[in-house]
Length: 216
Ligand code: AP5
Ligand code: MG
Image (cartoon, rainbow, N blue to C red; front, side, top):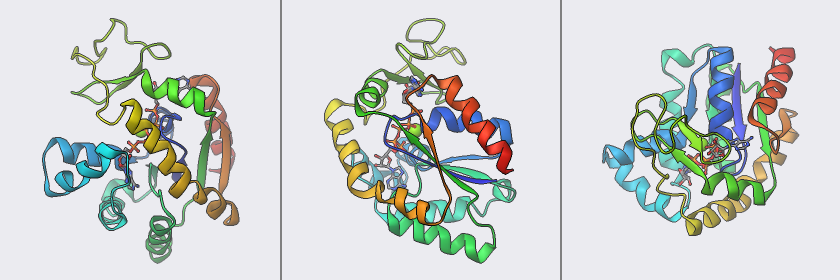
């Protein structure tokens, strides 16, 4: 199964991706995670990307397309994958389609997560993450057992560097400007599965898995 998770910042792509990937045993490919790792390691791509990520802007297509192209050629992606946060522009979607056409392995379904803006802002401002293992939490909706501490590795939880209010606002605007058009793009391909993501985490997961199980 080759899946795309599409939706605005904070809608719950990463949260749902973990559960879907574990259920269907496919790799979770998050361009945001790959870029944050590059920023942390101060690689050439990381240094270039940080300038854009700090402002809530998209990293240039050429950089991101190249990252994903090589990632989906790795052996663990041969029987499927889930793309989280890619594509984000029509140019990225075209490049992906071209590569997958050549491989004769088209996208199976695009899962569009949909929720209201107020809910999204609450989710982003309350998000916390573990700097060691990357596990995500929320101060109200997905609390760790001990406040502010990761359940898995005991590290102090932090806020993501691009979750400041001004950057969140810019990320939401950029989504509407550049990524929202992909809903129509995939609707025209008859691949869009729209999911109400304004519900509880487990209910959304059950809904997605039930719908994907019919397809696979
Ligand atoms: P990226 O990391 O992809 O960020 P994003 O799209 O802005 O989305 P988020 O990761 O912030 O949110 P999410 O939808 O994963 O929500 P989550 O599950 O964490 O990209 C970051 C940056 O990298 C971009 O701004 C750009 O600069 C660059 N970039 C990445 N990909 C790119 C590309 N393709 N092209 C160019 N640039 C690119 O959930 C959020 C919070 O809500 C959590 O606390 C969670 O616990 C909670 N939560 C989740 N679901 C629920 C629920 N149902 N109810 C209550 N709380 C919930
Ligand atoms: Mg995410």
